[in-house]
Image 1 (cartoon, rainbow, N blue to C red):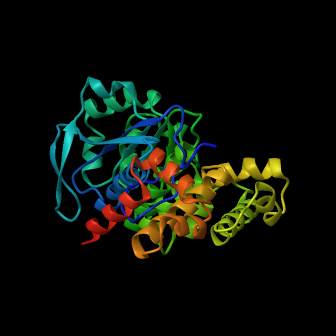
Image 2: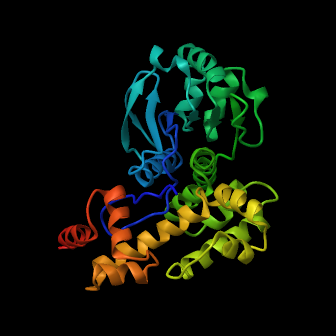
Amino acid sequence: MTYATLVSTGTNCFHVPKQISKPVNRQIGIVLFEGFSLLGAGIVVEVFHLANELCAANEAASYSVRLLSVDGGRVACSSSVRVWTDGFDVRHYGGFDALFIAGGQGAYNAACDERLVGWLRIVYPKSDVVKAIAEGRALVDAAGIAAQRTPSYSPQRAGAIQHESATESGDRYESIKSALTLVKRDLGLSVARQIAERLMPGASGKLMSVISDAGATRVGDKIRASAQWLEENCERPISVIDAAQVAAMSERNFLRRFKLEMGSTPSEYLLQVRLDMTCRLLTETELPVDKVARRSGMGSGDRLAKIFRKRLSISPSEYRARSRSEAI
């Protein structure tokens, strides 16, 4: 069995996808203009930053985000905060996995700039998705590619264009939705959900229902219920058949759907839950390692030590000492 990986050696443990055979390396571009919405652009940056943070330990993903403008240098947002940008050059002609065209009054002037319009015409066909935010649609229209817009994200179709209202709240919601859709495609629904809950805790449920596959809500609820059952019963012996029965699904269908919804197999998810509990018990209690192993469902101290050595290159006792020293 392939074991899931802990994100860090500290006390915070997250559910992350297992090491994948071909790590994801994505190039994200965000084009800024004077007066752009800091919320709309900033939320995109934060989505990919959190994705990198959550998957740092097992190197499942690497999102490289570039802030761009016509001439480079500092660009002021609507609240007069200035951010540094890179200027356009031939390195970008290969396209992006996702390109966001931000709004702001400067976007209208940029739509008359032939350098920028020409650049977008070159980059557009080589980009998986081009996302216009608010006034950024003026540039898309000027480049003559607005007719190819689609109402929803389609990773199979290069250059899918999406538009939304010019309100700042709409910018924020639609921007995070597009960014999370890309993360979901790469890393699974579970990682996308974790990021949504951290960035938009009050609206994450609505957001994830939009991102989730159409018609999959009821099945997704069953899978999440089984995942919760795994968490609540992780200290005792559990089989895949047990978890499939909780979801009222066949074992084969359960395995397929669980990985799609949660980003890992049930066995990997269960191991991660047990590792999370082990981290807490080692840090917060004085229980011997053998008792920690039994209480967290890991079986024995020897098995726990082997897993820790494999995943963290330290023993449970060393982990306990390190996590407590970091807390001081």
